[in-house]
Each structure stands twice: as structure tokens, then as C-alpha cells.
Image (cartoon, rainbow, N blue to C red; front, side, top):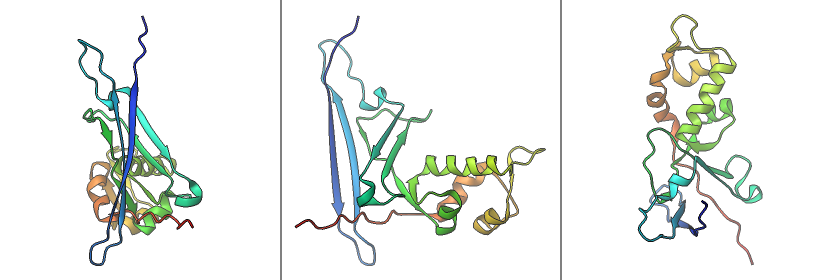
Length: 169
């Protein structure tokens, strides 16, 4: 038996002025509520999705900055709102992965794809990555454990550039 119910989705944004030496920033929030049905427990908005992709105008935000993504993981806490934390990649890493600004899970997935494509996983010790010249330059190591990647990425991830929308007259 199918039941029809209303799902209300709220999209908001917040602009924050830049602090001394820092540019202004912009945050996007997507929230949703399933309108309550009597005698039923309330489900969180995130329980209805495996992933959420918001595509912004490519003309306004550029080819590398127009997608905002959220993907469910095994550690995901159910929530009524999404605000994926975005990072600007170090210039060398961005060039290598073809990603400018993205969430940490997407960055790690892109790096893993690069490692698999270039067959950099050690064939005998699978937990190790044998760095090619590009990864050596980025991570300053010949060989790293894949489990170290999130920690090694920290100094290579920066706050995203502010989104500047053109003035309309």
C-alpha cells in the first residue's frame, strides 16, 4: 500500500564577510521535512537519499566549482539538513586529480581512482601506495600507507574560494 505525503525542502544560503586577510565566504544549506503522519515516527530528511547533487550555474560558478555533492557513508548520521564541507585543493593536487573544490570523501575517491588507474598500489603489500613522481612531489614520500592519506591531505586542503556572483543592474 502506497501512501502519499508531502516532503518540504528548504534551500538557504548564508554569506559571511571576510575577516582580516580572509575573503568572504558562502554556505549552502538544504533541509527537508516529511510532513508528519499521525502515529508514525518522524524520519530524518537524509534517510530518503543515498546521495544528493546540487548543480549550480556553470556560467556563474565555473567548470570546477558548480557541483555540491553529499554521499551517504556507513558513518553517516541521519540529519534534516545537508551542508557538505567543501575544500579547495592544493594547486598540484588539483591539477593531478582534475578537481578544484570538493568534499573530502570525493577527493579521497578521486585520489584512489588515480592510484588504481596508474597501478600504484603495491602488489605485495596492498596497504601501501608506491608514489609516482607526481605523488612524490605532493606527499614528499616514496611510499605511503593508504590509511595515512586522510592525514596527509590535511595540509593540502584549504577553505574554498568565495563565490562571487556578478552584480545585476
